[in-house]
Length: 261
Image (cartoon, rainbow, N blue to C red; front, side, top):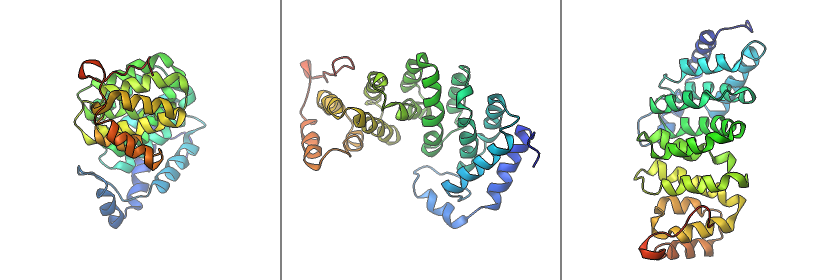
Protein backbone atom coordinates (compact mmCIF):
# COMPACT_ATOMS: atom_id res chain seq x y z
CA UNK A 1 0.00 0.00 0.00
CA UNK A 2 1.29 3.46 -0.93
CA UNK A 3 2.50 5.17 2.27
CA UNK A 4 1.35 8.53 0.90
CA UNK A 5 -2.31 7.56 0.95
CA UNK A 6 -4.80 10.33 1.57
CA UNK A 7 -7.19 10.45 4.54
CA UNK A 8 -10.00 9.46 2.22
CA UNK A 9 -8.06 6.43 1.00
CA UNK A 10 -7.22 5.47 4.56
CA UNK A 11 -10.88 5.78 5.53
CA UNK A 12 -11.91 3.55 2.62
CA UNK A 13 -9.29 0.98 3.59
CA UNK A 14 -10.49 0.93 7.20
CA UNK A 15 -14.14 0.44 6.22
CA UNK A 16 -13.29 -2.29 3.68
CA UNK A 17 -11.19 -4.22 6.18
CA UNK A 18 -13.83 -3.94 8.92
CA UNK A 19 -16.56 -5.14 6.58
CA UNK A 20 -14.41 -8.15 5.68
CA UNK A 21 -14.12 -8.99 9.38
CA UNK A 22 -17.86 -8.75 10.05
CA UNK A 23 -19.15 -11.27 12.61
CA UNK A 24 -22.96 -11.10 13.02
CA UNK A 25 -22.93 -13.37 16.08
CA UNK A 26 -20.44 -11.18 17.93
CA UNK A 27 -22.35 -8.08 16.80
CA UNK A 28 -25.50 -9.40 18.47
CA UNK A 29 -23.54 -10.07 21.65
CA UNK A 30 -22.11 -6.55 21.66
CA UNK A 31 -25.58 -5.02 21.58
CA UNK A 32 -26.29 -6.57 24.98
CA UNK A 33 -23.88 -4.09 26.56
CA UNK A 34 -25.91 -1.10 25.39
CA UNK A 35 -29.35 0.17 26.31
CA UNK A 36 -29.49 2.23 23.13
CA UNK A 37 -29.31 0.60 19.71
CA UNK A 38 -25.80 0.59 18.26
CA UNK A 39 -24.35 -0.50 14.97
CA UNK A 40 -21.33 -2.76 15.00
CA UNK A 41 -19.51 -5.09 12.64
CA UNK A 42 -18.86 -7.50 15.49
CA UNK A 43 -15.10 -7.00 15.24
CA UNK A 44 -13.16 -7.53 18.48
CA UNK A 45 -11.34 -4.71 20.24
CA UNK A 46 -8.03 -6.42 19.60
CA UNK A 47 -8.75 -6.61 15.87
CA UNK A 48 -9.81 -2.96 15.77
CA UNK A 49 -6.60 -1.88 17.47
CA UNK A 50 -4.48 -4.08 15.21
CA UNK A 51 -6.11 -2.58 12.12
CA UNK A 52 -5.66 0.97 13.40
CA UNK A 53 -1.98 0.36 14.12
CA UNK A 54 -1.49 -1.27 10.73
CA UNK A 55 -2.94 1.77 8.98
CA UNK A 56 -0.92 4.07 11.21
CA UNK A 57 2.28 2.29 10.19
CA UNK A 58 1.43 3.03 6.56
CA UNK A 59 0.65 6.72 6.98
CA UNK A 60 3.16 7.60 9.72
CA UNK A 61 6.00 8.65 7.34
CA UNK A 62 3.91 11.24 5.51
CA UNK A 63 0.98 12.35 7.71
CA UNK A 64 0.75 15.13 10.24
CA UNK A 65 -1.90 15.48 12.92
CA UNK A 66 -3.95 17.51 10.42
CA UNK A 67 -4.50 14.44 8.23
CA UNK A 68 -5.36 12.37 11.28
CA UNK A 69 -8.01 14.91 12.28
CA UNK A 70 -9.39 14.81 8.73
CA UNK A 71 -9.60 11.02 9.01
CA UNK A 72 -11.74 11.49 12.12
CA UNK A 73 -13.96 13.90 10.20
CA UNK A 74 -14.44 11.15 7.61
CA UNK A 75 -14.93 8.14 9.89
CA UNK A 76 -16.74 9.53 12.95
CA UNK A 77 -20.04 10.06 11.07
CA UNK A 78 -20.17 6.30 10.39
CA UNK A 79 -22.63 4.48 12.62
CA UNK A 80 -20.46 1.45 13.37
CA UNK A 81 -18.52 1.52 16.63
CA UNK A 82 -15.40 -0.04 15.15
CA UNK A 83 -15.07 2.59 12.42
CA UNK A 84 -15.02 5.36 15.01
CA UNK A 85 -12.58 3.34 17.08
CA UNK A 86 -10.03 3.02 14.27
CA UNK A 87 -10.03 6.78 13.73
CA UNK A 88 -9.73 7.51 17.46
CA UNK A 89 -6.78 5.16 17.92
CA UNK A 90 -4.93 6.61 14.93
CA UNK A 91 -5.45 10.20 16.11
CA UNK A 92 -4.13 9.31 19.57
CA UNK A 93 -0.82 8.25 18.00
CA UNK A 94 -0.21 11.89 17.06
CA UNK A 95 -0.59 13.17 20.63
CA UNK A 96 2.83 14.83 20.76
CA UNK A 97 1.73 17.13 17.95
CA UNK A 98 -1.80 17.94 19.13
CA UNK A 99 -2.66 21.59 18.44
CA UNK A 100 -4.68 23.63 20.91
CA UNK A 101 -7.38 23.92 18.24
CA UNK A 102 -8.14 20.21 18.64
CA UNK A 103 -10.16 21.12 21.73
CA UNK A 104 -12.83 22.86 19.67
CA UNK A 105 -12.80 20.11 17.07
CA UNK A 106 -13.42 17.45 19.72
CA UNK A 107 -16.23 19.40 21.34
CA UNK A 108 -17.85 19.75 17.93
CA UNK A 109 -17.64 16.01 17.28
CA UNK A 110 -19.18 15.22 20.65
CA UNK A 111 -21.94 17.83 20.46
CA UNK A 112 -22.87 16.65 16.96
CA UNK A 113 -23.18 13.04 18.21
CA UNK A 114 -20.29 11.82 16.11
CA UNK A 115 -19.21 9.80 19.16
CA UNK A 116 -22.67 8.68 20.18
CA UNK A 117 -22.15 5.81 22.62
CA UNK A 118 -20.35 5.26 25.90
CA UNK A 119 -17.95 2.96 24.07
CA UNK A 120 -16.90 5.55 21.51
CA UNK A 121 -16.50 8.29 24.11
CA UNK A 122 -14.50 5.99 26.37
CA UNK A 123 -12.12 4.88 23.63
CA UNK A 124 -11.53 8.43 22.47
CA UNK A 125 -11.51 10.79 25.42
CA UNK A 126 -9.08 9.25 27.95
CA UNK A 127 -6.36 9.00 25.32
CA UNK A 128 -6.97 12.08 23.18
CA UNK A 129 -8.38 14.59 25.67
CA UNK A 130 -6.11 13.35 28.44
CA UNK A 131 -3.07 13.98 26.23
CA UNK A 132 -4.43 17.37 25.13
CA UNK A 133 -4.89 18.55 28.73
CA UNK A 134 -1.42 17.32 29.64
CA UNK A 135 0.02 19.40 26.80
CA UNK A 136 -2.17 22.45 27.50
CA UNK A 137 -3.06 22.40 31.23
CA UNK A 138 -5.10 25.60 30.93
CA UNK A 139 -7.67 23.60 28.95
CA UNK A 140 -8.58 21.54 32.02
CA UNK A 141 -11.22 24.02 33.31
CA UNK A 142 -12.75 24.15 29.83
CA UNK A 143 -13.08 20.37 29.74
CA UNK A 144 -14.52 20.43 33.27
CA UNK A 145 -17.12 22.95 32.09
CA UNK A 146 -18.46 20.32 29.70
CA UNK A 147 -20.27 18.87 32.71
CA UNK A 148 -22.91 21.59 32.22
CA UNK A 149 -23.40 20.90 28.51
CA UNK A 150 -26.86 19.61 27.50
CA UNK A 151 -25.44 16.82 25.31
CA UNK A 152 -24.96 13.57 27.25
CA UNK A 153 -21.80 12.62 25.35
CA UNK A 154 -20.19 15.97 26.10
CA UNK A 155 -21.18 15.46 29.74
CA UNK A 156 -19.68 11.97 29.85
CA UNK A 157 -16.54 13.32 28.21
CA UNK A 158 -16.14 15.84 31.03
CA UNK A 159 -15.54 12.88 33.33
CA UNK A 160 -13.73 10.27 31.24
CA UNK A 161 -11.32 12.83 29.75
CA UNK A 162 -9.69 13.01 33.21
CA UNK A 163 -9.38 9.26 33.81
CA UNK A 164 -5.68 9.01 32.93
CA UNK A 165 -4.96 12.28 34.73
CA UNK A 166 -6.37 11.04 38.04
CA UNK A 167 -2.99 9.62 39.08
CA UNK A 168 -1.51 13.13 38.95
CA UNK A 169 -2.11 15.05 42.22
CA UNK A 170 -2.25 18.39 40.44
CA UNK A 171 -5.46 17.35 38.66
CA UNK A 172 -7.35 15.95 41.65
CA UNK A 173 -9.02 19.22 42.70
CA UNK A 174 -10.40 19.67 39.17
CA UNK A 175 -11.52 16.05 39.06
CA UNK A 176 -13.50 16.41 42.29
CA UNK A 177 -15.11 19.59 40.98
CA UNK A 178 -16.21 17.72 37.85
CA UNK A 179 -17.54 14.84 39.94
CA UNK A 180 -19.53 17.14 42.21
CA UNK A 181 -21.03 19.04 39.30
CA UNK A 182 -22.31 15.81 37.75
CA UNK A 183 -24.15 14.56 40.84
CA UNK A 184 -27.42 16.15 39.78
CA UNK A 185 -27.47 14.57 36.31
CA UNK A 186 -30.15 11.87 36.12
CA UNK A 187 -28.48 9.65 33.54
CA UNK A 188 -27.01 6.26 34.38
CA UNK A 189 -24.28 6.64 31.76
CA UNK A 190 -23.14 9.83 33.48
CA UNK A 191 -23.47 8.32 36.95
CA UNK A 192 -21.35 5.32 35.98
CA UNK A 193 -18.68 7.43 34.30
CA UNK A 194 -18.54 9.69 37.34
CA UNK A 195 -18.10 6.73 39.67
CA UNK A 196 -15.36 5.39 37.42
CA UNK A 197 -13.57 8.75 37.60
CA UNK A 198 -13.83 8.86 41.38
CA UNK A 199 -12.54 5.31 41.66
CA UNK A 200 -9.46 6.31 39.65
CA UNK A 201 -8.98 9.40 41.81
CA UNK A 202 -9.14 7.15 44.86
CA UNK A 203 -6.17 5.16 43.59
CA UNK A 204 -4.08 8.30 43.96
CA UNK A 205 -5.45 9.27 47.39
CA UNK A 206 -7.93 6.89 48.98
CA UNK A 207 -8.39 9.03 52.07
CA UNK A 208 -9.33 12.05 50.01
CA UNK A 209 -11.96 10.05 48.14
CA UNK A 210 -13.45 8.78 51.39
CA UNK A 211 -13.61 12.30 52.86
CA UNK A 212 -15.22 13.59 49.69
CA UNK A 213 -17.92 10.91 49.68
CA UNK A 214 -18.72 11.39 53.37
CA UNK A 215 -18.92 15.16 53.00
CA UNK A 216 -21.22 14.97 49.98
CA UNK A 217 -23.37 12.31 51.61
CA UNK A 218 -26.80 11.75 50.03
CA UNK A 219 -25.90 14.05 47.13
CA UNK A 220 -23.85 11.21 45.66
CA UNK A 221 -26.03 9.07 43.34
CA UNK A 222 -26.00 5.48 44.53
CA UNK A 223 -24.75 4.17 41.19
CA UNK A 224 -21.85 6.63 41.29
CA UNK A 225 -21.09 5.68 44.87
CA UNK A 226 -21.00 1.95 44.19
CA UNK A 227 -18.58 2.40 41.31
CA UNK A 228 -16.43 4.82 43.31
CA UNK A 229 -15.92 2.48 46.27
CA UNK A 230 -15.30 -0.76 44.36
CA UNK A 231 -11.64 -0.91 45.44
CA UNK A 232 -12.35 -0.31 49.14
CA UNK A 233 -12.41 -3.26 51.55
CA UNK A 234 -15.85 -4.81 51.96
CA UNK A 235 -16.35 -3.45 55.49
CA UNK A 236 -15.52 0.09 54.41
CA UNK A 237 -17.84 -0.18 51.42
CA UNK A 238 -20.72 -1.18 53.66
CA UNK A 239 -19.95 1.63 56.10
CA UNK A 240 -19.84 4.23 53.33
CA UNK A 241 -23.12 3.05 51.86
CA UNK A 242 -24.74 3.59 55.24
CA UNK A 243 -22.99 6.79 56.29
CA UNK A 244 -23.57 8.60 52.99
CA UNK A 245 -27.31 8.20 53.46
CA UNK A 246 -27.12 10.36 56.58
CA UNK A 247 -24.14 12.68 56.28
CA UNK A 248 -25.00 16.30 55.60
CA UNK A 249 -23.08 19.50 55.91
CA UNK A 250 -24.37 22.64 57.65
CA UNK A 251 -27.88 23.60 56.66
CA UNK A 252 -28.66 20.12 55.38
CA UNK A 253 -26.43 20.48 52.32
CA UNK A 254 -23.29 18.57 51.33
CA UNK A 255 -20.41 20.37 52.99
CA UNK A 256 -17.50 19.46 50.72
CA UNK A 257 -15.34 21.71 48.58
CA UNK A 258 -12.38 20.77 46.41
CA UNK A 259 -10.08 22.94 48.49
CA UNK A 260 -11.16 21.49 51.85
CA UNK A 261 -10.48 17.90 50.90
